[in-house]
Image (cartoon, rainbow, N blue to C red; front, top):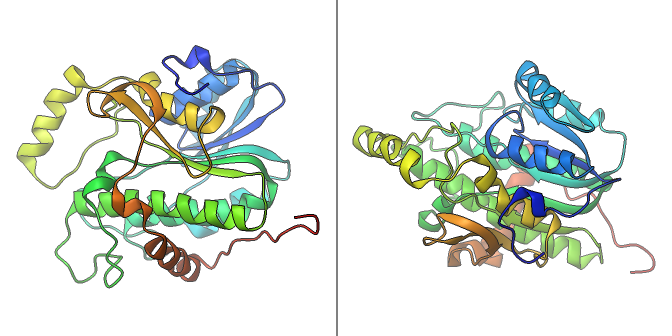
Length: 299
């Protein structure tokens, strides 16, 4: 499966366990529903457990909701402690966007903390139980972003909501690249991939900080965007399709806005290995988590 135009094209997933963050609504819920329909056991890792349970109850197959708040490293640790079984696929899907600067429980700028650091910690803590893929959902917003190592948390700069969001989404891609480099280095069969949904109407609120732009986005989204099922197609391809190690999936039409999912190219700044390594080192220090795997004796 090198492209996918419908969730029904997902291959049989019987016997697999899939963990999806932020799966109580939107793209995460659509992806979870597709995996469950194809026989996978699905764990919805959700901040709102009641909402997650409602979502799980509405799906056919083996689906359960477990509590995970990516704005709290303590919650990430607690969630991982509760996952004793092997996991085939981890989908880092959950995302946050805020119109003003807020902080996570650990004092990180919220968008960077939830979108990148929370998933960074979750992946490293869970990696010794993952057998197939780590998929991280990013955004086309990465293409206009950069990583400001002098002020990652927007403590000195004037806060720009969309700039902070773009930085966190660029971090997702740099994380994927460096994770894959490390997996390859130890001879692991696990691969890291990334996906972006294009323009998806999911209830995820765009908060650019510009009232006019936000109003225009709200008006145009119903006309131009695809729904959660369409937005989930790149995730499904990245998780179970023919995507190379370190590869990136996204919509293939209208300049990457919508359409069937295919392998696409990220922006140049997402492919800088030096920035990726530096971001990894900083993220390890901030989260207190590290890449846990070592090369096997046979590798």
